[in-house]
Length: 322
Figure 1 (spheres, rainbow, N blue to C red):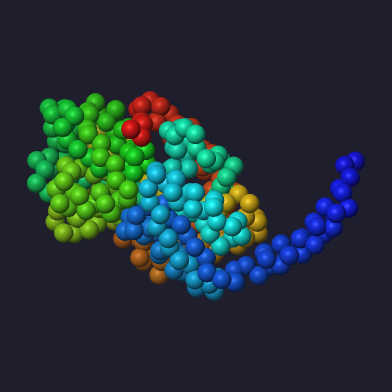
Figure 2 (figure 1 turned 135 degrees about the vertical axis):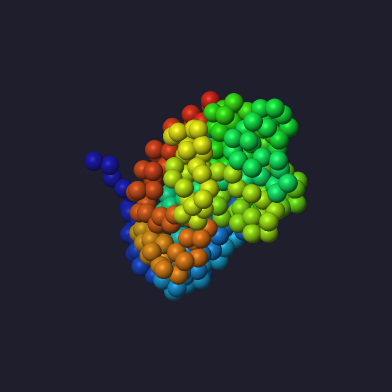
């Protein structure tokens, strides 16, 4: 039997009550959600709507800290450089799965550095074109792309994000080649299609709303398996000649792996309650968001199921960050 040195045992005995008290008293100050995406995009919108209700539930402020860049590495590093005390969390998305496939010499292992807390939301994505683009339907878009290969530009947030994955898969299935323009966030891509800088975008139903409402963009199709409730007249890519196609965006909340499990579960429970709140739903439903708020174990299992799917798309499409 392994013997613990007397001094180490004494230190453990003294530390254990302190850790227990810290967990029992959580939270007793402001909590920070580090969002890896730009303000105004889908992840930011979901984080702000849900976070506002969570702070009412837990009785402490939840502040949103947007840290864009580095394919979400800047935000991830910001979390890992913070104390693992349950007062800093990361709002991330597909980067948790794709970055290990695309980036060498990462400073950490995504699967061991982070603990899944809960999935916040799932967002259908759309293929939309600028207002004066000649195609009025997805079939016309494909025909034009075939006639003009490697000339039509489309923006997504960010490189190797779910929009990029959805776009690469669509191109392979449709037999077309587009010019990809990566953006830091959905709001940035929406801004450029509004200005006519890019021909098309593949962004979430949330991010496309401003340019559509301004009459500066038109939606051709959605990436979900079923038509989006917020866009009932817009056909899916699946029903437009590509059965089985489904590639939604999503975002979730992550903790540093060393954060105590009781804190992770308490925050997940608060998010679940927020996701059921009618006021939060009233804000998010028009954006086409499906609020999730699942337990940590369910979110972790979902992530593991997503890994082989995303890996196949990345490898077969030859997606890179270059």
